[in-house]
Image (cartoon, rainbow, N blue to C red; front, side):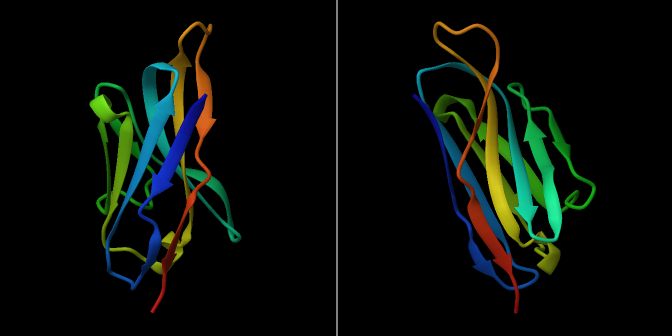
Length: 121
């Protein structure tokens, strides 16, 4: 019914850049906030960045100044531009969308399956 598919992960050297994408599809009425989380063996899942339907953004302190979240509402897609990557950014990155579906009451939360980011030399 509703799917989130992430892409753009991979391996980069410290200081490099990656751009993640997450496209939502299915029986969607409207998408509210879209979020990027990450999880690694060394750290619990944490919120990296979020963006509201009108473009207001929030970032974790650890990524401020390096990551930029954006969205294309016409495509129901959210992006995460990651620059100056550090080894500690290594994690599986997950997309989460807060949305409403046609005919449903209330906001639902959907998760993508994740895309792996590895930062190493």
